[in-house]
Image 1 (cartoon, rainbow, N blue to C red):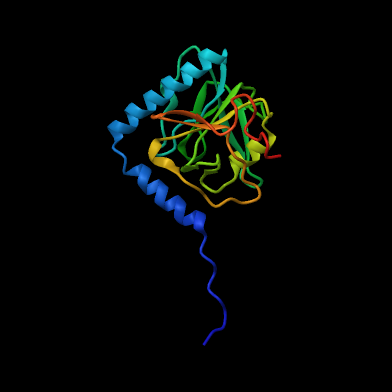
Image 2 (cartoon, rainbow, N blue to C red; image 1 turned 90 degrees about the vertical axis):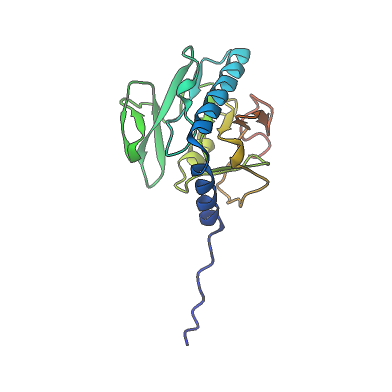
Length: 198
């Protein structure tokens, strides 16, 4: 009989499966309506704060769709430039099909998005500001380099909220979260996603 121990289960892997299945099960019509509501809330926040440049993302699978963001906003999008180490570059439209079928900027000269607000995708969002991504580390690396004055706002559906998530040393908390139910802050807007966490 082998004395080799079985590998420890990865709690994040199971949570990713759970929250992806949960999001996939949301009705498409509801996701479309909630996406528009989220876009309206982001636009209202930007108008109130005088924000013109926003770091956005194209929908991957059943993620929310930010296509409804106000036309007055200048949107900056990510492009995958390295898998190991995980690295995104950022640029403005025009967009073209890129990695994993996502639409990416044809020109992406910025290592950090030159924006006043960053919207961050995820599979799940915890009450303490931590998020569960897809496990490749792109946004962890970006959040570590993001200027402290730029709020990093998680963007997803209310069903993706959870009380807590497993946290690794490289995980970075967000400034806040916007869902169809509203916008809530883990840190004061403008204080930066990492206020009190450096």
